[in-house]
Length: 203
Image (tube, rainbow, N blue to C red; front, side, top):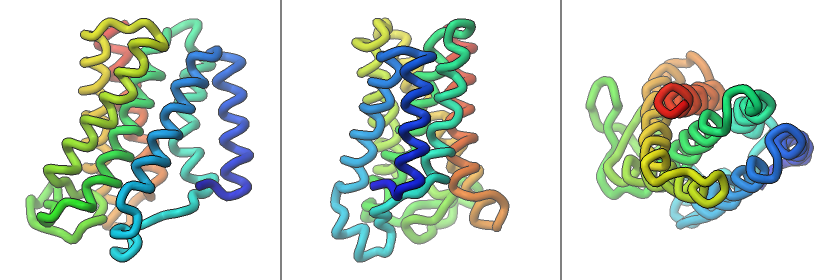
């Protein structure tokens, strides 16, 4: 799923997570990668026929998804694990929403104009995609209950933090369609939103 440079960067981020955050941080990231691969492979034949299936990702994708979690792991002695979990929930929500949303039989709508657009358009939302986003964030939050000993209430808050991050990602996706920013920058903003909500609502 990753090219050579992507693998090298992923290994570097994994080392940062392990040495500064500990095994729990690395384990949650591994769960993220496992779920990301699974949801990408889901109905891949349909996505391929639509021209929306990305089999191999590069270092830019790894950087946008892994940079902030690695920084948060480094800062974890001072800020705790909640911002890290929130950022992971947000990125997972975005991933699930994107990969599942394109399969929605109904056309998605632009989040700003509320007009129908074609599947795969940045800045668009669909019912199935939104449900997928919530499920993706929830999967990370649920895993964190066992890995980080979260309470169900904290996990629910982080689930909504992840969903909020994916919605902001969609909003900035509108500007991406206009030529401002890239998928990487919107992913990074998504992770920031999840981290901030996780920090201010729980810490």
